[in-house]
Image (cartoon, rainbow, N blue to C red; front, top):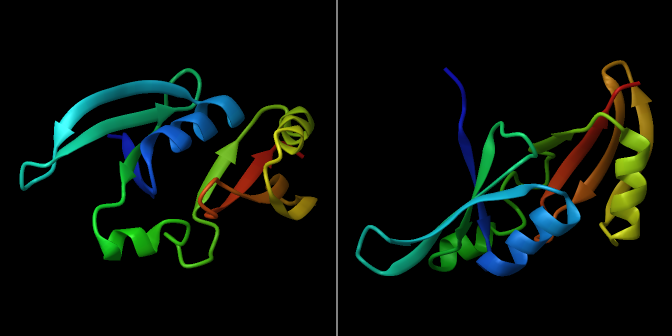
Length: 130
C-alpha cells in the first residue's frame, strides 16, 4: 500500500506545472483532458519527483471556496515536505530561481531544513541529511 497522489489546489495549471518542473525539478507524468463531476472541461495534471514516488495532482480551483484555499491549503502550517539528497546544492538552485524562503537553513535532529513557499504561497520544508 502507498499514497500515490496528493491534491494541490492551484490557480491555473500551466504556471503550476512550470514551477514544479522548471523550479523544483519534478517530472510532468500526466496532463490529460478530463471532465468535472458536472461535465465541464478540466485537466488531469500530475507531477512527481524524479524517479517516481508520491505525486501531486495539480487541481485548478473550481469555485470561490476552492479559490480561497489556493496558497493556504494547510492554513499557514508547513504541510508539504521535499526531501533531497544534496541540501546545499538544491537550496542554492532554488534561491537562484527566486524561490521565497521564509526561514533560513538550520540543522535539526532529523536533518537540514529550510522553509519555502510554492508559487501560490503554501509553506514547504526543504529537507536534507544533516
